[in-house]
Image (cartoon, rainbow, N blue to C red; front, side, top):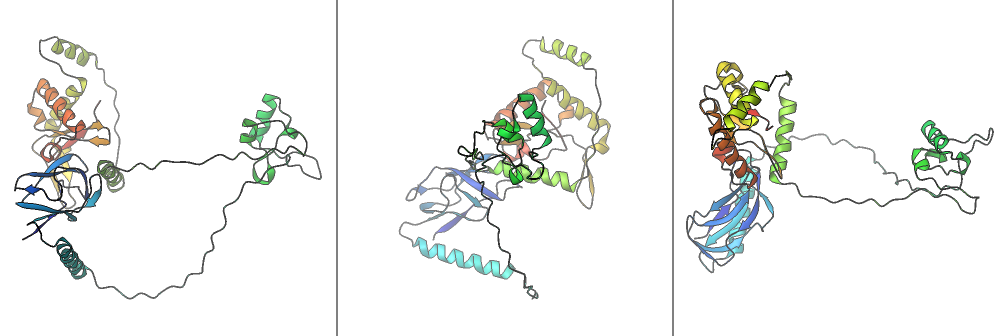
Amino acid sequence: MAEIVYMPKLSDTMTEGVVADWTVKVGDKVASGEILAEIETDKATMEFESFYDGVILHIGVEKGAAAPINSILAIIGEKGEDVQKILAEAEKAAKTAEKEEAPTPVPVKEEVKPAVVAAAAPTLQPIAAPAVDDNSGRIFASPLAKKMANDKGIDLSTVGGTGENGRIVKRDIDHYTPYVGASTPKRAFVGTESFTDEPISQMRKTIAKRLAESKFTAPHFYLTISLDMDNAISARQQINSLEGVKISYNDMVIKAVALSLREHPNVNSAWLGDVIRRNEHVHIGVAVAVDDGLLVPVVRFADGKRMQEIGTEVRELAKKAKSKKLQPSEWEGNTFTISNL
């Protein structure tokens, strides 16, 4: 009997995944525990194993494509089974479940809105000569354009205006060429608009969502202090003079923050809506910049580790983050987060 493999939820914040690569193709035999694909989540690229034995009958998401969780990733069964029938039954079951979960619609009075006619986009027309007031002979120009023309020694009567009603503006001075009679009118500059759309990775989508949630759902306040780091600089030089030992200022900050949280446990807490969770352990999240954005691996029990141990662990976690090899256990559970210096 055929089994449907659905897009898994590989992290707590994952809503969709991208198939980074398939290790199998239609017609291949697979066994339970064998790697089917590499799935890119919002935080890492993870290997996804098969839970079934059989033949790959169908692949529902092409390499490089994104799909929401619980969508059909593949079908595994016996050779010769009717794939279209399986897909149709799955689609029917999904619609039935969706219908059962859907709330009963509430009748609403339809409001008739007046039709709105979109105005045609304005078209730049050639400007034959500067705008002049018929009564006074004064040339219309912005104050900035007048100043620029005066500085450059440009006669405004020879400048064609591209502003409203032919008014001379800054760009006309920037792109000035002398106006010579009505037979050679100055035309408004017309450029070519172009752009490139770049697909957004799952990581960037989640970063944007989380930053917005943080900014708009939690009160913010900022504390700033100045520190004399002379003693820290001296201590680091002495420690790094020892053979086989190397720490960074970032490692020192992690250790200092961890000890501070141990001394002030109220800060090592989290707002969970109906309770405040006061953590008795100290796990420090360290922000690491990667090509697609930002990841926050966690140094666990940082208050009890030496700076050398912290430094080694941070370097290993940063390497995994940049190669997208971090596991959920390495990015979850931080009680406090700092930026990476």
